Image (cartoon, rainbow, N blue to C red; front, side):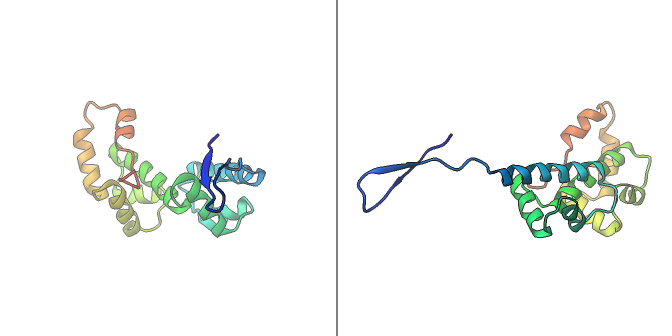
Length: 157
């Protein structure tokens, strides 16, 4: 529990206020946001859009986007693209598929958009990543490679 001290200028005493605990509506929204995130994690390779996700949890698109960003630090679309790029990195490390095949396997419909988003998150284009990952993967277990190469959307965070 946090206490906030405020000073009322017309009154010489300090007042203490306690922030409100989460309301039932806020808790309900958090449960729904968790369902949305779980669905994105499960169905990242399927065509998903924010409107469909919002409809499934009976929220408006704007409300879902604002609440999702407040809870998880990024928009639903950014979270979806991060999951897709994360899976693409794993497929590219494996090395048995072309960049185009990986693009479609993770649910992206445009190779250009996929390459742009991949480069934004990872720092190198998918073809370069595939080549570098093949060279560096010798002797590193895949579970360790996945952890140390996890994409981070906000590099400052």
